[in-house]
Figure 1 (cartoon, rainbow, N blue to C red):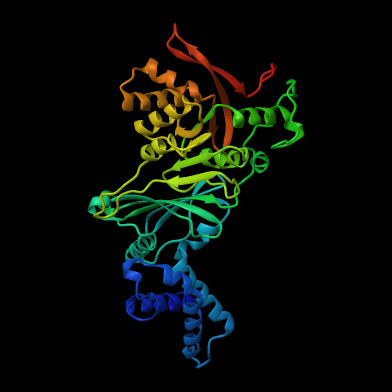
Figure 2 (tube, rainbow, N blue to C red):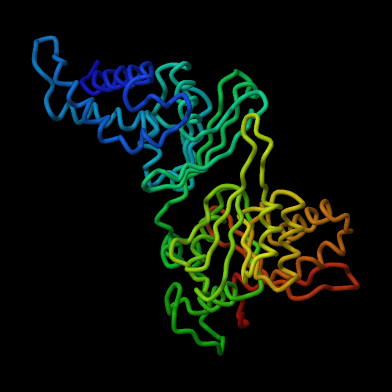
Length: 416
C-alpha cells in the first residue's frame, strides 16, 4: 500500500468516526439532513482533525509531516463537502458528464467523447454509502415511492451539477445509477463558444445592410453576428438537439445579451439557466413532492404564474410535456418573447414535437397546434456542440396546414 492510499484510508476512517458519533460536535444534525451548521463549521471541523492527527505515528514512531496532514485533510474535505473518490471528475473542466453504473463502472464524457474512468469504488458497499450521503446532503429521499430523483447541487465553486439518481430497485443487478451533468458557473460567452467551434467557419461575407456596433463574436463574422442580434431581439427561440448537444450552454450565453430594460422570468426543472447581472430577472425552479409531502409545483404552474407577472420574456428550460408547451405557446401568442428547448433531430422535427405536446394538453388537432407556434420566430438545431441549422418561422400555410420555415443558417449566397 503506497503512502497516498494509506492516508486516504486514514481519512476515510476519520470521516466514519464523525458519522458514527453524530450526537457529538458539529455533526449532531447530520441524520436530520440539516447541513447549515456543518457548512458554517467546516474550518472548525478541519482544524479539529488536524489537531487529532498529531497523535498518529507511523510504524517507526515518526509523527505525521505537515504535508501528510494536508493530504488527509484534503481527503476528508472531499468526503464530507465534496464528492469523495469522484471529486477530481467533478472539477475536471474537460469533463461534462459523469455516469456511475456501479462500484466498478464509471463512464465520463470528455470534450464530447465518452470513455471509461480509471476510478472505481473499493466495494459495492462503499458506493452505496456514497450514494446515501449524496442524497442526504441534497435533502433528497430515494425510496420505493421516489425511486427516480432529479435535483441540482449549486454548492460547488466551479460547476452547477444536475443529478439524476435511479434506485437499485429499478436497475437490473440492484446497484443505484447516478448521472451527473456539469454546467460551468463561469458561463461561456458567445465569443468563447465560437472559439470552441460551436459556430461554423463557413460564414458568408456580409451582404446585409443592417449595421451593428456591439459585436457578440467578431466583425469578421458580422453576418452571423447580425443573425444572433435578430434572434435575441426577435419574437422567440426554440433550441433543439439531442441530450448534451449544447442547448443549455447556448441558451445561457444568449441570456447574457438580453437587454437590461426587459423583464424576464426563467422557469426550469433544475437551476441551470442563470444570469447574475440582469437587474430584472426572476429565476424560478420546480418543487417536487418529497417523501410524505404532497406539495409540488411544476413547470406548468410556473408558466401560468409568468402570464400574471409584468414580463417581456418567458424562458422555460426544457419542454417535456403538454402543459409546459401549451402554457409557453400561450405566452408567446400574447406578446411575450419566449425561449425554450426540446429534444429533436432537426428543426422541423422539433416544431412537430412541440405541436404534439400542445395537442396533448389542449385537444387541438395538428393544424391548430402548429398555429400556436407562430409566436416563436427562430428554431436552432445543435449537434455535437455545434449549431448546424437555424430556421425562421415565417407564416402558416393554410392550404398545406403547415408552418412556413425558411432556412437562414448555414448561409447561402443570399442575405440572411
